[in-house]
Image (cartoon, rainbow, N blue to C red; front, side):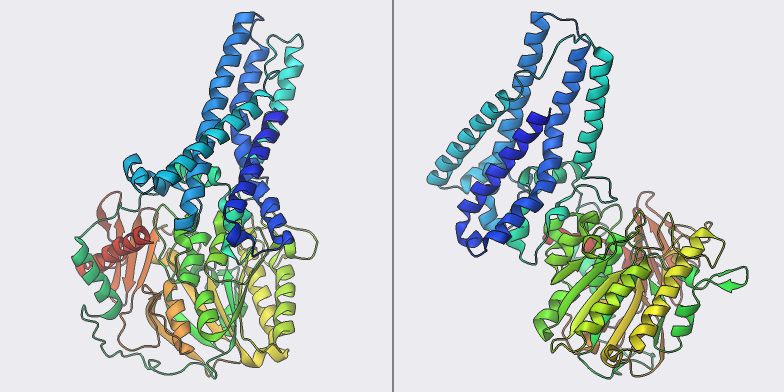
Length: 612
């Protein structure tokens, strides 16, 4: 079994080398060290895919142990193995052949989108020479793979072994190892394309991707981006435009908010630290346990900076909340755009805009595995210069998810203070993790494990601000604290209610001009436009994001849950369940305008995804 696995990995490595030779103009721009890292990181998905290839032969080998020994049985098993490896060789070679030709046009490795084209349409796009070369490459590749496998499975099946129980036990142990390889190890992040991303340069990341894995994973787990159609396209676009601008013609209307049109900062080029705190909904920050506040630091700090009173998280998952914050793009029910690497790469990004328009350098810090749900790929694709996760942190004890927030905070503070004297401004993002199940933290202020974990992160946030205040970095710093999503606490609150999705947002730091309370109803996605607006940078590409300091934008919160959405404003809330195709009355009577607004937001979200 090990020989089959190694033969498959070898096949993938040779294919990667040929791919790099074929695209020698681009690969030639990199040194030997970068190319070596392509092969090294590429092994993650190569091994996982090879594990899938070896899985069926392993099961056949276990079955063969218990079959009665006969030449006929052995002949049948070998013929079955031959058919299997010929089919596997042909499928893999087809994927590599098509991928080799398509990358020139897509600048992305092959995925399930190729299936939307008929064979006739694909062939019509090829010149006779391309067809001949492609057919030759496919034939040679298939033949080479078949020969390679024939050398490895000649003694694969030993029919009727005398020590059946022992042999079966060994095989089952091998199956366990193979499962771990297929999964991508024992970390929370399973094998995905993000595991091989390691560079800001997308060509190197693409070179490390295994196209067999990329294609088959999207075929099996593909998403239906055409599922939500409530209106015709013209009507949907009109309602969406009205939801954002308060008028289909783009007319801006006056707002009663006294903070509108005012600058909230003392400078338009501050260093920025954005802290995305795990699960910190308002039901947590407002909670008490036996008379003690759970989050005393956040509640004290809101008196010192800009506090957003009526903000709503876009979703209930970190991957979706991260995209909502950093790309101003709404979450989707039952799917996550971050998992579609190609489409996620086409999203706008605050880091990319700051770099392009104002020369910001950007870093992302996470104490766990940044490959989780393709996060690393998304971050590099949307403009981050550096992604720092657990493998880059100093050694020490870790929880299931990674290093505790206090350890990561120490690291983040050092990096920020060290960079304070740089000429270029910095945009740093830290995603915390300690306030996540199983709530194991080095802290014991509250005797409720869940609330104690949140209290720990709150104390870390307080320490972070205290240490930065004492450093030269504070004077020019804008520090933003915003959760990735809320938390279902108390347990009885509905998973789809506004209360479940109500979150805080705090802006503080030396760059904040004065304390302000912003009580407009808003969404997590509005951070992008609001921040860029304060810096005097255009945010037109963030079309779902509204500048909360700009007069004339509508004020409402919008979120999604498992196949539904909620819209909440100063008059009430509307919750709609798409599966049931019905409106759920929650905190106020249903409002037809809110319902249409939510449907337009959801439909337009998926329309934009289809177009990416």
